[in-house]
Every structure is written in C-alpha cells, then in structure tokens.
Length: 247
Length: 254
Image 1 (spheres, rainbow over the protein chains, first blue to last red):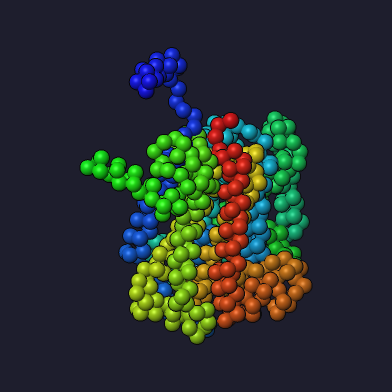
Image 2 (cartoon, chains in turn orange, brown):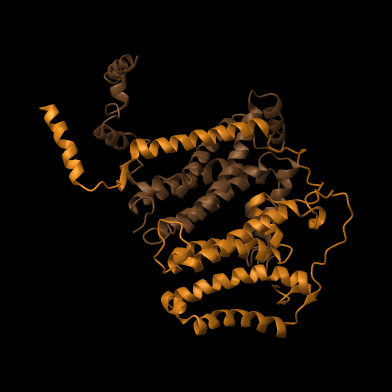
C-alpha cells in the first residue's frame, strides 16, 4: 500500500507546474537564521569586549571642566547644531521636530507603492528626503566627533589638540528684524507655494493637510541645515533677533 | 552510528522529562514543526509560516532581531552589574574601579554592557532605515512605525541615562552638556525664550533633581536607567512585535 502511494505521488507533482513556495514554515527556516544571527552577534560582542575596554576617565570633579566636553556620540549632531543655533532650537526644538516628523511620515506619505522591496524608482521623493535627513544626521555626528577640538574649534582628526587655533567667528551679522522676519516668512511661503504652482500633481495627490505638514517639516529641515552655509559664507549670527528669542 | 543516534533520539523524546518540557515530538515532520512554533513560549511570537522574501538576510539584515538580542544582553549584563554598583557619589566611581580590578570578569562585563549599548543605538537607527527604505511603514503599519520611533527615543534615553552612572569626568560633563539643553526649553526652562520658571523649578531642575548635577541626579538616572525606561521599553516592544503579526507579518509586496 505504502509503495503504491509513493509511486503515484511523482505523477501528481509532475502534472502541476513547479512553483516556488510563497511561504515557508517558521521552524526551521526562520528560527535557524535567527539563531545564526544571534550566535554571530554574540561572537562579535564577546571579541570586542575582550579587546576594547570601555572608557573610564578620572573621577567626576565639578570644578574641573574638560575642554571640549562632548555629549555621547548620538547627541553630538545636536551639539554641533549649537554652533549655529541657540540652545532652545538646537537642543529642544530640533529633537522634538525630528521625533514628530518621523512619526508623521506614514500619515502624510500617500504613495502606497514600493512596499516590501528596496525600491527607489516608485518613491523617489520620500527616498531622497529621508536619505538627506539621515546623511545630515550622521554627517553632523561624524563632524562633531572627529573634527571638533578644544573650545569646539575646527581640528582635523590627525591634528594635535595642542596646536593653537584662531577662534572661529560665531557669526557677526545680525539681520535687522525688517529683513530677517520677511526673509524667513518668505522662505516658508515660497517653499510651500512654488510646488503648488509647478508641481501641481504632487500637491493634489497629497491633499492640502498632508501637503502643508510635509512641506513644513521638509522646509524646516532644509532651513536648519541651510543656516550652516549661511554662517560659513556670510557670517550671519541670527536671521531673526528679538529681545526674547533669536533664530 | 546514525542508527544509534536515531534510537537515542527516539528514546529521549519519549521520556517523561522531555515530553513534560516540549509539548510536541521531535520537529522532523511538518506537523511537529508547526506545533513547535505554536507550543513553545519562546517561539510563539513567530507566525507559523513566513513569506520567502522576508527570510532573505539581505532584506532585513536581522536588524530588529539583533536590536532585541542586544536589549536582552543589556538586561543580563545590567543585572549582573547592579550587584557591584551603588549609585552614590561616594561609591559609584569606586565601584567602577572595583569592577575593573577586583571583580572576576568585571571589566569584561562592563565592556560588554557598554559596547552592546552603542551597538543597540546603531542597530535601532539602522532598523528604522531598513523599515523606511522597504516602505514597511505604509498602511496598515503606520501605528507600529510610531511605536518604533518611541522605542528609538527610549533607546537613546536608556543610553544617555546609563552614561552618567560611572561618575567619571566623561560621564559628568557629557550629561552636563545634555541636560543643560533642558534649561533652554521655551516656557518651561529657566533660560529659554518666554521663561516663567526659576532655576529651582524648571525642566532642568526636574531632570537633575538639583540645580547642578549631584547625587540626586545620579539616583534619578539610576532608577530611570534600571527600572522605569527598561519597563517602558519592554512594554512598547511587546506591542511592537504583536502589531507586526497583527498587521500581516513582516512587510511584503502587496
């Protein structure tokens, strides 16, 4: 009886078109891969922990400020922004906007294509904007970690921190309010209006709410990053300066 | 030899001890493999079947799983470190030195905790990138993406609160720089725009438990680092993984 069934089986299989199975059992296919990944990570972690010692400096002394005092690497990007902005923007507004902006992504992205594959062609816009953000974030971190020395001055990674460096200007020009305020408002209005005129399709597919939210975050991101060249090229300290706050 | 091994397995899986632990037979048949996933507490988070494209290492790079694994490493090494660490200005730094010179494998333990923490920050960020680039945040997964962002924030906070605990110069000043930012919060910071609170009651004060970084700060960061934030992270992780299943498993082409 057993033999008969075995004989019949290949016939049946041959009559069907051989198809790659869409789904596989989690055990063993997924579980084993997870196990291998787990072993590899453990191995790497154990080797690193044996070779590299975690830093431990001398005991904390509140009266002895090290120069420079750097934040942990994942916050160095924000610390680097402190050069260009006051702390309430660099340390509070930027992180809050990043978190809200990230959370807003799935709600404003109306493009339903490109799910489940690494696909640039079907979602160029989202791809480019997100990549700019990530690259800028890591760029600022790398710059702050390796190119900043005492007093947050510019030092190349191989340069000794004992070399005397001229003080970099923290910006000298403060735009008067009647120039700065219209410039800033103009930046946002033009930034939101021009795509409506020239990329009407983009505006229509998003719908007005999503469009304005998207554009606000994108313009803010480019605005924050845009102040870096403004500082280096035009030596601008503040775009808007009031007795209460400055941007 | 192989026959012997087979006989041994056959005997083993029929012992009372084995069958009391594992609720199904040896997973060499389809039925038993399905039961392995269904019946094992550790595996029950997994779906029974996975789409083949999601199995490719090149698709996920195992980043989410590695993040979870590093979190578990952090928990284990962290608990062990807690045996040797007292969060007071008097002892904290001394205990670091003891870990290095007196405790067996103390330095290794601390190294592992430190590097796994850096690794976890990195893998969580990369996991977010992977999810973005594969469009895995799109409906119906919007909410899970938000939980993921919260988990990223929690990871950063966990790492940051842990940074102070060694109580060395690096820790002290990095946290000084970090918490100083809170002073600049609009309205609620003593030096921020439109500030209405004094230095004794602003955001920075509540973060530090004092005007400057002190023993209060150390205790606050210790409790946050060891209890509050890990609990929050575990809770959100539970929802995160549950939602991955409920939202139709790991993202695939529609």
